[in-house]
Amino acid sequence: MPLAKPSDPTTSVLLHFSLKGKTACVTGGARGIGLEVCRAFAEAGASVALIYTSSKDADETASKIAKETGSTVKAYRSDVREKATITDTINQIAKDFGKLDICVANAGIAAHHDSLTYGVEDWQEIMRVNLDGAMWTAQAAGNIFKRQGPGAGSMIFTASVSAILVNIPQRQSAYNASKAAVVHLAKCLAVEWTEFARVNCISPGFIETDMLSVHPKEWRDKWFTMIPGGRLCDPAELKGAYVYLASDASSYMTGANMVIDGGYTLP
Image (tube, rainbow, N blue to C red; front, side, top):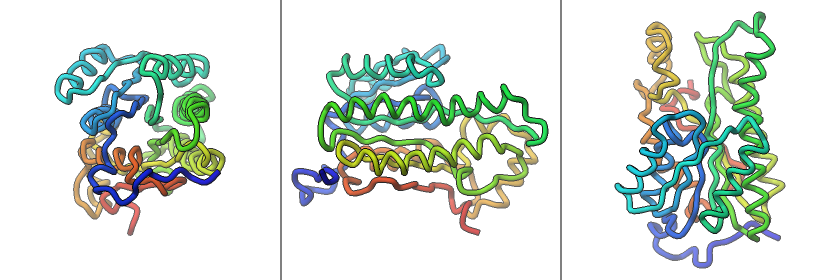
């Protein structure tokens, strides 16, 4: 069966971007990029499940977005590292909302180590969250999409420019390798899932989040000399890209990796 086609591709372009009537879930949804994705989907009309692991104010955050947008937004605590746990959570979301149309595997962590001194636990933890977690999230959503029928889903992975280059001066071989694997995982699933879902990636560059704020000033100064755009990106500047991939506006797009980096990967 071919990739699903919108019922009327000729309708107003703004309607193509609407998520009204759709249900979305977002891992790592309580802060940073994930938080802005949850807000964007709610603003576009979707009902949203904000999935978090440890944030103390996730319920309050979900309620705030719901009040501001008029959409249904609920918080769900889970752990992407545990296949059974995240699978149960996503199945519960589909049950609570009646269906699942969009899933964003966004949860991720970073650490910096010399490659010659990486410990087993440090390496495995990066992979468990960034790669295994992305796979278990996608697998749970994919099984729901398949049960729902042709063209049912949009799966979106948050990868990184670290998937296609080696960042400096920080040393983060595990993070880079995990994100490169996520991009290729998305391509594989895009081919496998054409009958029931589209699968795409977004690879952000340097985004102004908590993950970057802890870095030494000399690292940040170095990055600014390497970004043609001359600044970091506000997480909210990514909202449009996620809505695009989640909506009918990207109905013929699958297996793509959208790089959003202020030109960082160009020189």
